Image 1 (cartoon, rainbow, N blue to C red):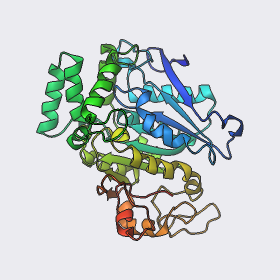
Image 2: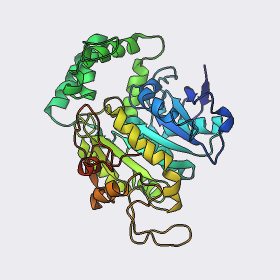
Image 3: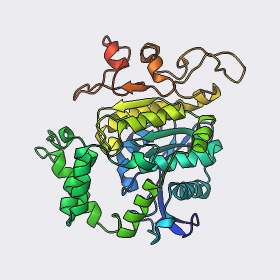
Image 4: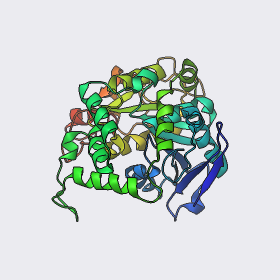
Length: 388
């Protein structure tokens, strides 16, 4: 079992990690034609929650070999759970991730974080901006009071969660916290689980995860990670270091998120000078909107180098932006990184400087791609910017 003993913080911790890649791509990895991706999951979740993204990222092995580094954060899964809450902060956990990058020999990587994992990703990018190729923050806030669930429904769910005695009861409440009701009520129409609702399937997965050997979360881990979330804040120094970093930044949020209010996700994007793309989902976007998340990751990860060469953020193109040769860049997204110029132009000024791209639900068939007769739908779709 691959583990690294991290000495970050007041209490050392053994961090479980995995590197996923296509077995046929090993001989073709080098800094020129391959990419490294670090995936950091959120509160109480293990690395296994990234499965919907892994399939897409690793499918590029024929054109762009990709390696993905995943870990269980301290306090959950197969990673150790220090007893003291002082051993849990987002900065300490960012140091854990940095230690893993050093351990596996990655000089740089694209960093993607979800919820608490996005808080960790922000601290990592602030501490080591020279090691970041791109930064994607999903379902997160600037921390402190913003981490408190808003609205009567969220508070009621929080009370129910505190009162739940059995793992089955906790599962019922936790799922309502993380997914839209419409998603949970969907009935599978194909495969071996035809006729069963997603609610039933996810509840089974949740209970199995909590009871399975070594993949749940004990009390020390629960209280420790809670401490990390409550004490996290995106400081002015963090924001300044990320804004000045030579890498693209993207914020993605669910319009129906009960745990991390959408307005706080948009506020964080505005502070970072990054676009905030709103998807039709709740907090667990990586599962609920996996297809759309994958399209956005595909774009920012596999086009990031061209964006870095122009020294401006993803979709953040001012009149003063220039490439390394000093040639002014007045386009919104340059031709060699945009999959479809028409869709990009229709994104408009709302995508710049922390604008919020409002998504629209496209139905079960998914979004239409830019360049089709219905270009308006594709340009304003819930992916914001669709890749090829």
